[in-house]
Length: 224
Image (cartoon, rainbow, N blue to C red; front, side, top):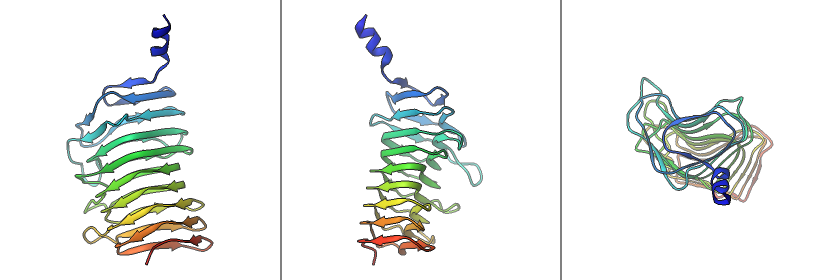
């Protein structure tokens, strides 16, 4: 009986693309493939949801319709406190799209083959992620769009920007390299001020570090 109770208290297993409508912890048990040209693999409609990809991958198998395509994991602006961690996302137009406050996105690898518009978009804590080749010819491509605490991430091969950071953020220890795909602007790290911008590295981008507005603390960044 104790063993059964322990199983019941563990994370809910995710075996297919679905809508997550109840708060709680979830985990993938194998790779997922989304086959639609538009839509969302894991749509979150509740607050306080944690999704552990458990080292597995969510991938898209088809293209897009017009200027849009599928999204791997999404929560609307009225959903808060969403956590996504520990896995890979491949070939989606948008990888992570968490529009509400208080999100945590960590330990993900997001990339192509594309078309890719945005790798990770979140408000809250974005740390320890890697985006590679977020570079859609028609709709641009940004590795990480975030407002909050953005630390220890790596972005390369983006068309528009490796990082696009909102006002009032703490941006520490991130790396943006070779965001120069095709005809795009190729910005390494773009930050809206005031924000704390410290100990980041941005090299070999068309523009390495761009601070928009006044009031940013620009300290110990390597961005020639």
